[in-house]
Each structure stands twice: as structure tokens, then as C-alpha cells.
Length: 312
Image: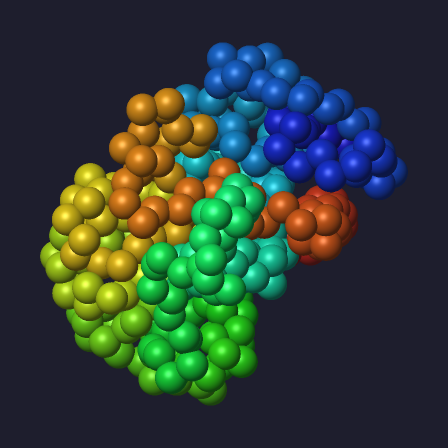
């Protein structure tokens, strides 16, 4: 089997990360690949492994030898699944590998908003002040508040556990869940109107692109916070920018944006009460090791005729 990694730079947790894959076949690793380079580099590949490269219909039909696409992530919106299916190409993703780490980061964004924890702060104002507790911004206690979780996959469930540990009430909106062991299921409108915190954990697909727009944002309490660690395009960013700058909600914590990396003049980087991190919630070493094992297992199972984690 010829195995080609198209963009190893996205998950190089340590130098020997890809070594176990060499046992599966002839391994070729490209640190980065432009869209124009994919067809040439994958021409002889039986298996292609990728993270951010887009496998469009135009590219897929030019790769007649390709049998398996292994995704080093959970999302699959960058692969034309219908054309892959037509070409008998199996596409597998890596579900839930980062659920714990992503939920931890989501809650970290929330705590930074509620407790005004600024990593750049040296407390110089405190030095210049005479009070033993220097305090200029209101803080929020989470106990008794309501955590609204949009999406009830592995990460949403991890988020619910953390919220419960902080004494929060949990409510959920999901298109797929019919019952939950914690909290209660509500309509998306009720979720946005009743929550003190809304944390987004849905996959990006046509039905969720731009889902969180002004019609939902205007339902939020002025004291509520919005957290997004899923995909940037789930939110209409222009609408979010407006409610932030008009103080219609208390703040937002975003680990994802529509354009990544963003332009230097990205408005959300300067928005009021908005924290932006660089799509890093999945990047703990523990999560990357789980990712490695899942992707390796996906390739191995495919080669043995028993594909797993199939999304096509």
C-alpha cells in the first residue's frame, strides 16, 4: 500500500509521530501541500491522510488509484463525500479524540471571561493602588447559572460534565438526541433565551453554516456568554460582532474563525469582550496521541477489509 500524508505540519506533536504508519506500507510525508500539488503527490496513493487539504470533486476524480482517505480530525466538510462514494473511496474521520481537551479549553475561555483572567496582566495597577484587592471589572459566579450546550456529541457531553461540576444547570439542543442522562432537551430558541452560557459543539455542514445569526443572538440575555470551539462558520461573524460591540451580550470566547489564520484587520480580534485563541483547543499532547492511534487504526482496519469510523 502506498500511503501519502499531505499536510503533516498540522499535527506534528513530536518527531516520531508518523513512525508507526511506516509499518503499514510505503509512507511519503509532505509537510504542506497546496491544492495544486495534491493530484501529483497523491497520484500513486492507495491511502491519503490529510487534515486541512480540500479533497474536491475535481481532485478526487483524478486519483483513480485512491481507495481510502484518512482524516486527522473529526470534521469532514473539506471532502466531497458524494464524489468519494461514487469513486468507491472510503473516508474515515477521527471522532471524539479531542473531546476532553476541547471541552477543557471551552471552559477555560469561559473562566477567562467570567473571572477576567488576563495572561498578559502584570497587575501594575494593583502596585500603584492602596487597596489589598484591586478590582475594576465585575466577575461572575457560575454556580446556579445555566449552561446551554448546542450539539450533543462527545465534546458536548464532556462540557456538560464540567458544567455540572461547577454547579451549573445544563440544557441542550440537538437535532439527533431524543433523550439525555443529564439536563433537558430544548428548542434552539429556548436554549438561546434561557442560557447564561452557550457553548457550541456542532459539526459544520450546510444545515449549521451560519446557524448562529442575529435571530438567535438577539434572544440571548445581555449577561450571557457565547463560546465556540467547533467551527467558525457556524456563527455569522458580522452578526456576532454587532451584538458584542453594542453590548447586547456579555462576551464571547472563540477558538475558531471563518478565516484561519485571520487577516490582521479581522474585526473580531478587536471586538468588545471577545477572546480569540488560535484553533488550539485540540492540541494537547494527550489528544494528539489519541488522534494518532485512531488514524492509524482507521488505516489498518481499512487494509484488513473492515473499515471503521466511515463518514462516506
